[in-house]
Image 1 (cartoon, rainbow, N blue to C red):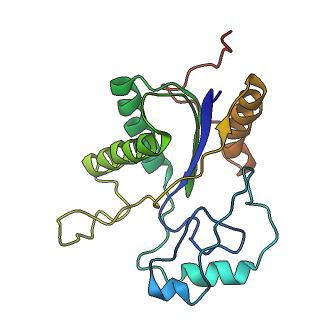
Image 2: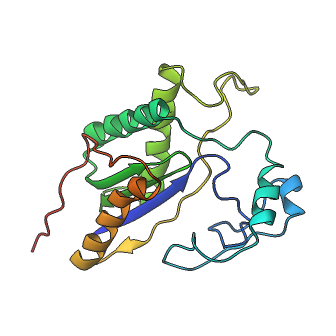
Image 3: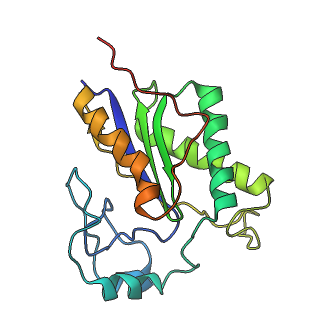
Length: 199
């Protein structure tokens, strides 16, 4: 039985659909990116971030993006966190760990009444709303024909299922340690609650 999920999703430009390490994408939608290869769909349930790959190819592909790859500043990360907090308060979603990094986000969340894909869409939406309200959106100076800025989060997510307390005890410290691994301070978010296994 699934107890929760380790959710990973990127800022715009973080992990391209044809990343040589593998991706969760089925297709490459942008013609300029397609010349760097087709989608690299992977079924791996563990991170492939450290897999050996052609780093030049990955960075060259990023240069062909329509907009610069997003790197959230500390102030922007705080706004993203406040957006998540708004969603958690309104929905009742349980969050056991969260790390908001410059180019991607990790969360450990409990099972919920919605599919995890829907939860991620709504979390991104609340974070975007908060960035816009604070005039901190990375693409706030650009307007599309619909009057909104381009999306600052990448499409999709990677979601390993957590089925046992042991899975939880592995995933939560992993998420908590991510900022430290990048040379940043540990993160404490008001919407994160301690994990206690239930019978």
